[in-house]
Length: 263
Image (cartoon, rainbow, N blue to C red; front, side, top):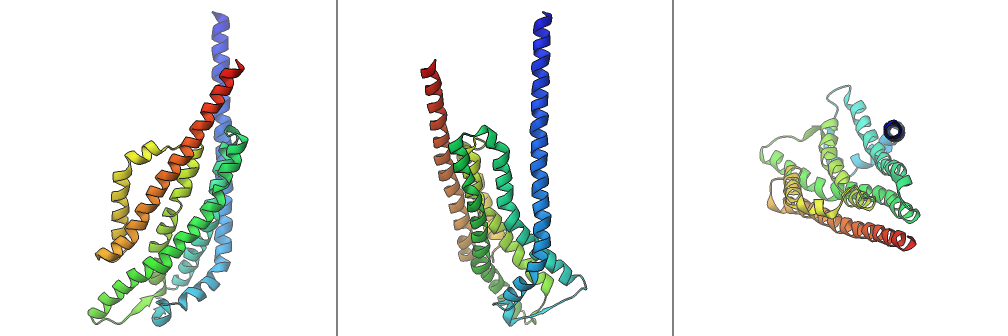
């Protein structure tokens, strides 16, 4: 009886030590992400000026007068640019840290396969920024401009308000463009599966339509131009999750058959 009790206590102690090791490893990865986020903010401050010069000379900013209504407007604008630059770097790095955290539980082939998603996250974020800036933002601004003109108002905008309007549209879309890569990655390592995504399809579609309505002018065409690509991204995520999930299941089944054969 004493031996069994000692054995149970030893197993419990080992489990607690294993859990603490995992928590410590996760904490280390989160610290790395925070460090890169801060470094990205610092680098983004230096990149803010050329980015601002590029954007302010493009339509629609190039044909309107932007003003500073507060001494803090320029500083706030620099921080907004710095945050976007930081996210471009931190999101794929964060995915890499997640991969590093779960890597010991993955096979050699799975490690190589899942590592490929990291550059994919980087390019999808850039693609989302481009889609938001070149397609959605001009539509939203044109609608707002037409309303302003119809009311006989002069277009004198604060530089902080103008770019806040732009970033509030562009950045959420860029983050949403990460969805297929993140879903596929989580499905490949077994955290997510297509069954859950299919159950959430109606809710996801509704959320995408609401989001498309909120960030675009209140007309049917603009709503469709945003909502349809977002829904397509979700459906692509379901397909990719299904493919990654089946590959994982096939590998696990092959491992089980190999173990049964060896016995």
